[in-house]
Image (cartoon, rainbow, N blue to C red; front, side, top):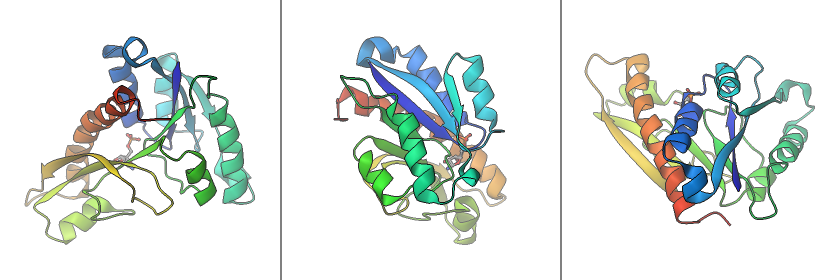
Length: 200
Ligand code: GRF
């Protein structure tokens, strides 16, 4: 069995979309994969309750109690690596996880660490993507699923979705439109990785 460990910081709607797709499309039978754990750096992340209600193990690791990024990442890696199996290392999915991982951490999960970013990368890496797209006069916006590398919001693009930007959009209305596409492309991209057996 390949365990999928999903890291979140907030509402966890992408995590839920992935877990629901895994159920509906029988990833366990098809790919020998299951969403095994959801880890949040925030105790009040709403996604934790959703995961618990759906029988997924949850864990909280508050970054604020660690002296530095390295110490936090070391403990996080320990908890993730508990989901490695003798057959296969865990697949690590960043789904609205609002912490930057250290280069050592990224290296440790090379090739099996994916992220979703709410812009059409390489445009608008970093924060406030929707407002920045509106301010730049973009007529289209979107989301990108990508492999995680040490450079923030870079790494091989696995999937993208495009949505229109309307004249009366604000960051909130645009975010809603983009998020609905995130829920479609993120599970798809993960299924594709699993199907290709692309994670070593
Ligand atoms: C998503 O837009 C994601 O792309 C961004 O943060 C949001 C998280 O939403 N990084 P959710 O927690 O998956 O609902």
